Length: 129
Image (cartoon, rainbow, N blue to C red; front, side, top):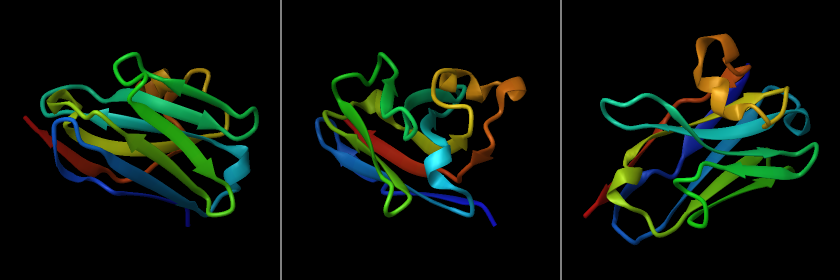
């Protein structure tokens, strides 16, 4: 069975850091791009970052550039999202997703017509002011 297990969420004060993990199983990890998304209360899901093993590229939403870093440990089939300088507006449920077409259009994975191959369950990040 395919699994994308997101973990690492929690409560942190503004300015603090968290590292999220997305552990993948049930598919060939190296053949997929892994993206992180978030959904804040009352808002639509949005893309945060994406990493592609095939061409070793990373993508970031403008709102997190310079604060978040995505990385991949292919030996562990795990993608990490290091989140620094957290702000209250980063509060959301964070999800990871995998798609075989790469990261180029990852921001559109939130659209029904562009649904990625796999979604994981979410992990809650709460940033207090």
